[in-house]
Length: 108
Length: 119
Image 1 (cartoon, chains in turn cyan, green):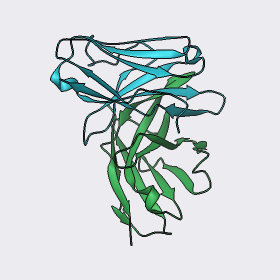
Image 2 (image 1 turned 60 degrees about the vertical axis):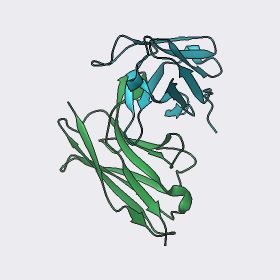
Image 3 (image 1 turned 135 degrees about the vertical axis):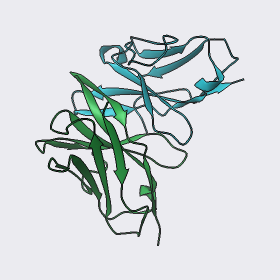
Image 4 (image 1 turned 180 degrees about the horizontal axis):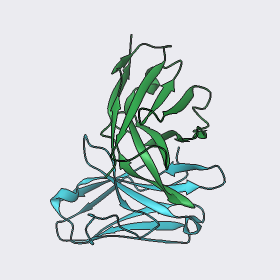
């Protein structure tokens, strides 16, 4: 089981805002990354260092991290955003990454 | 932009060794860290391990006794060997580049390859 807790699903209507949470003890002290994975495809990095976006990722994707919860926010959700979303931290004490269990976005 | 491609057998018998290769193009493996990550059908992502081109490696403690990841700088590839496989090792296996400073993330991924463990 993962040390990062993600609610398994999020459902929103097109044009609305989707929020994914990633819970962990003092996660605000770590850098969090987020990945989008569409069915049958490899994950794609959408957020790193809590809130930075790789080139090519729309500004609709944003991230924040404080206390025991990190959040990925997708504004103006589109049908093409339907996917699984995973959070990830790097555990500096053990020197390896940890993934959350993932959350499925359903666009109603 | 760096691209990664996994290759290897799609079917492995129980108790045998799973062997996969990741070929990197558009960049040299003589930089950065390189990782294997897997995803059992219908489940989440599981980190297997990573290497640096020099040979430094780090493995998931739950798999460490069975895993070896090795670089081949002459071919710009790195490989995964997982011994004594069981049906629980059936998964899509991804290779990825690990990037960052202080804290790291996987910024480039291969498309993944399904490996089924079955007799």
